[in-house]
Length: 162
Image 1 (spheres, rainbow, N blue to C red):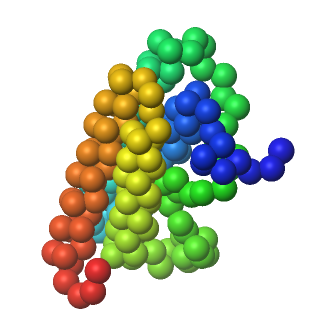
Image 2 (cartoon, rainbow, N blue to C red; image 1 turned 45 degrees about the vertical axis):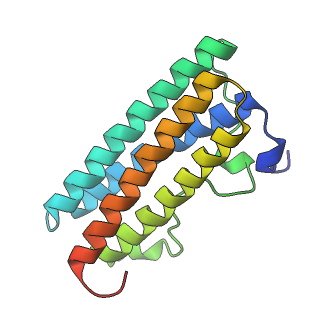
């Protein structure tokens, strides 16, 4: 199966994609929390807090899916869609192996992903015909914006270029 364009996705597939992204990013954020726990505990705590929010978002989306479409059967994941939604772009995986991922870089990676997520939910709001889904996507876009603002502030507190 070839990757789909976002505009080709059905409402069910958009909701499935949103669930997959939230779950995957909860896992990714927990990894960052563990990586920074010893030398940047405040940032590690933030990563863990955002991960918990991502899990809560996934549960909200699952409930919305089951209410509208029945039992959730995953037929679309991040890998099935051409556009990147919220994936954490680890352009060089070796930095994890050699432990040279610094806090600034991690925050920039998370910031870029959170911005993509906010854009994803804003697009979902525009395309949603179901008023409840539209409101849920709007709320999630606002949560993602809150994450963006916190991460930008944390980067600014580190000094240097963002």
